[in-house]
Image (cartoon, rainbow, N blue to C red; front, side, top):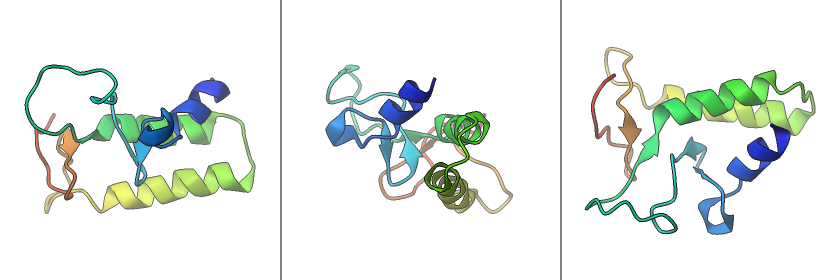
Length: 99
């Protein structure tokens, strides 16, 4: 599990899925899905990663600081009634549905 967390936390340039503290479901450059447009980060994946980081049993400061930073940034993407869209787009917009 720790190896998976470490691999995910790399930037997409280095094979990971995290960019600017947001988690992508996959890298469309490496795994083309045939859909037009840009893939946004998947908000549930970001929340799941924060949870996994806090439950991983790693109490080193960098791991906890990363989880704190990620959740604080995610809180800023809620809409005016506190809901999150399925995705966060490259400019912070909320494409997709509201699950």
